[in-house]
Length: 237
Image (cartoon, rainbow, N blue to C red; front, side, top):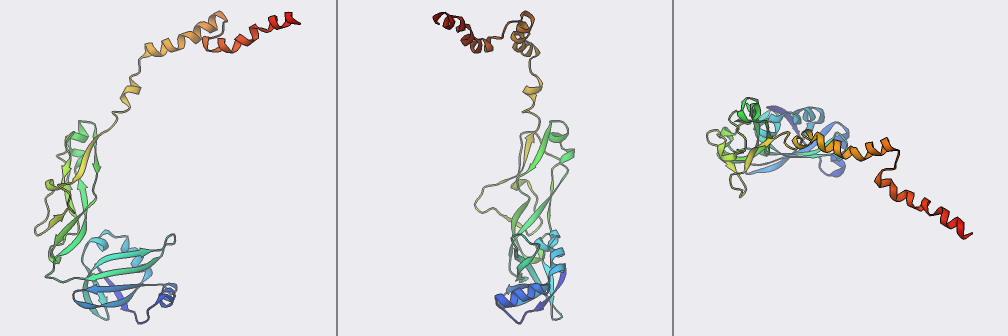
């Protein structure tokens, strides 16, 4: 994906504020053993680019003064409540140096699995992206994950995913983390749906009997007791 940036001459808080008012976003490019370079990018073009998954997970072609640079998006600072990009960071790419990047996972095939079709389950995506290490030329845009083999009670782990050639996963000390878990749906609703009709009828029997005889239900008898003492109080007078 290609975009255009411009070299930024003025720096500082005031200069950055004026830049944003003019419709530009300040940024910086660093890495590859070169001096950091201050840049500015058209805000609207950048806003639409950030909505694309490829802008976050692939090597980008950044044009500055007619020259192309291979870069990676590293950080974006957003306004707390406005639709405004405050600052953006890019890292230059060295073709011979391995990269550490987050790559999104694209899931498919769960609707054809035994777990979903026949066992009343659903696929819960525990991870939607993974950290990888690879050379720039081997960096994938995304990693496809086939869920057609899911079964009830069996989770899909990182070791079950086939990674592209030259790509290795970075687990940060975790041993074979779960990527997709199989969850049984509707189990909690079964007892309520199968309530015993006889028990419900027994619970309503006292109320029905009280209505037929004209007597108060047992729960109301305690409230009527104080009224029964009224005649005795009258005799004392």
